[in-house]
Length: 111
Length: 111
Image (tube, rainbow over all chains, first blue to last red; front, side, top):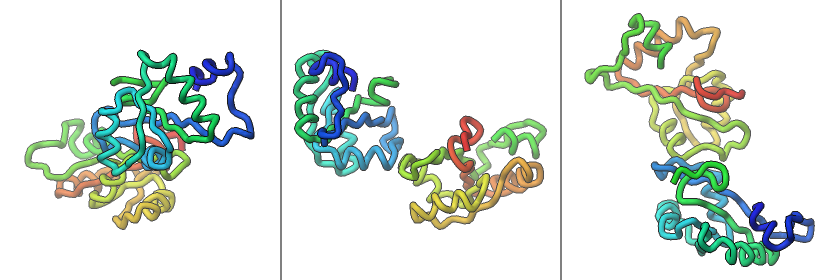
């Protein structure tokens, strides 16, 4: 969230009452596909867009749970340009879920 | 697992290849009932018996996920006698899931 805020608002928080979009950080399994919570699966199912470290890797998880939502790559090599695009979509009202290949984005990423 | 082993075998591990029973430590939500993994729900669903800190508290979780398995109380006030009984059931081949009111039994119990 910090990166998204920082890239379009010079560090000011983007969130206002006029902003209907939301960014969810979703923890994903680190080995066993069953090691994911019901809330995480629901959040992925309800998101408009899923930003992934590696879309092919995340697709395995989404397919396992029958989640058919669009994905977009978002990783260290495209962060600069992609962050602005994702922030614009959030401002446009989209709900975006951010995941890494495994673990909790920005907190614990053992993948 | 340690307590169960210790109470009936003077510290020797109970597990042998002849022992078909199994004890699972299952982490439960600390506030939001959706914060439980698919593997945890499956383990509870497949257990023969669920040993609970407070059976009424755990029943709320089990009801939420439609799990109809017998429960037995197992907490600090009945640990001495109950441990031996549970160990005997494990030796008899039962699969037992151990839970606390919230969190991970023996690891993190914030309840």
